[in-house]
Amino acid sequence: QVQLTESAGGLVQPGGSLRLSCAVSGRALINNNMAWFRQAPGKEREFVAAFRRSGGGYMTYYGDSVKGRFTISRDNARNTLDLQMNTLKFEDTGIYYCAASSSNYPSGYMRREEAWDYWGQGTQVTVSS
Image 1 (cartoon, one colour):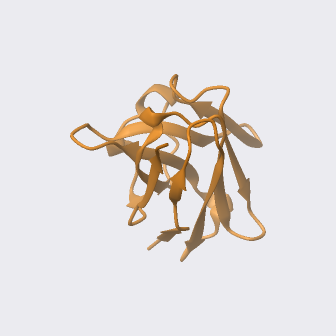
Image 2 (cartoon, rainbow, N blue to C red; image 1 turned 135 degrees about the horizontal axis):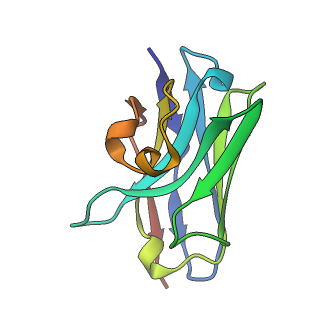
């Protein structure tokens, strides 16, 4: 079993920044692919960013709406996954979820919820003036 715990989100003004963190327990982070998803009110859960194992390391992937603004990072020694969010927009508002999987699906399928086995409880991010 893998347990994922997101840090508290928060309220931030448009154009601002926020950093989320996900603590991983129960299985070493190094053995997992990891991702962030988000869900806005009334919408389906959306892929944000992910690490996918490739060769001897990892490749990163981003959703089109966050590319160039968000950065995913991981610290295998500390078993944490972070998401640095810059230049935040109103439409970035939502509940952000950390996800993990021991499977290494193709990058296209990896953007789907069903590719991920474990989920955190979610943390609210609100972008508002």
